[in-house]
Image 1: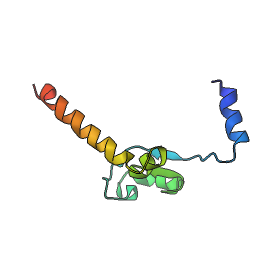
Image 2 (image 1 turned 90 degrees about the horizontal axis):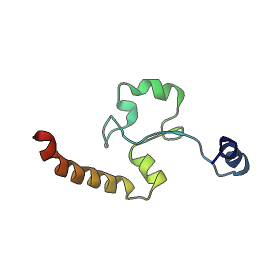
Image 3 (image 1 turned 135 degrees about the vertical axis):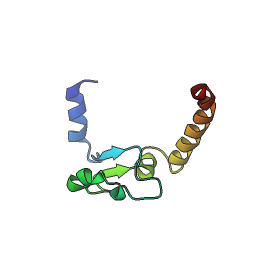
Length: 88
């Protein structure tokens, strides 16, 4: 896909949404990203939840409702399998 075709798509499609996203919420899954000390830089320019999508909301947007929970389950399983290798 060429750069020109990437520009053409948003110009012709009226359902394109543009936002910044973070797959991981450093403030924690149960807390708002705005509570994270370093978030002040991002929220100074982006409206959280509209311009900036973080954590569960991001995964639900690009996947399905259960995408975030499935991702966490996979991470736990991989962590359990690789922990013995890392611990020696």
